[in-house]
Length: 139
Image (cartoon, rainbow, N blue to C red; front, side, top):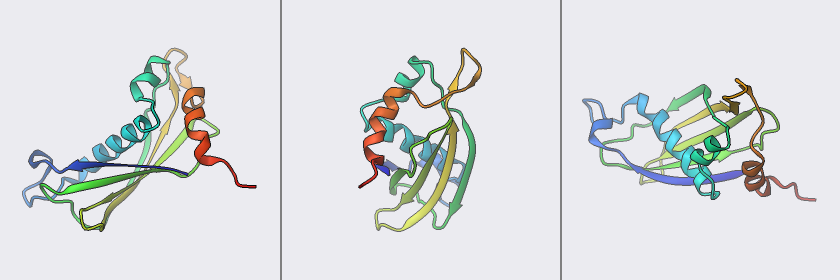
């Protein structure tokens, strides 16, 4: 299992009239978490795209438990529970406030896509090599 965390401060423009993080912005926080999780591996989305791999979202599920409020420092925990062996990858996201309370969780499913061939493909070997040590089975 691979886990990474990053923090995001809720900005005024991301909130609704009540000062709550607007529900549609949670998906943006998931995306920041995914990008930073890959960056923490020493790799970037940009590098994947330069290698000819895109990762469009094909499914998004989200559950809301407590609101994130204006100026809260939110911790985004991004988890890969499985190393993909096909074209799909699932990122599990959990958002916590500064008190450690779970605010929201979601699952985002993406596919590896080759834009030249216009078809799904497998995870690029370099990204696979960076993730595989986190999924070694113990004997």
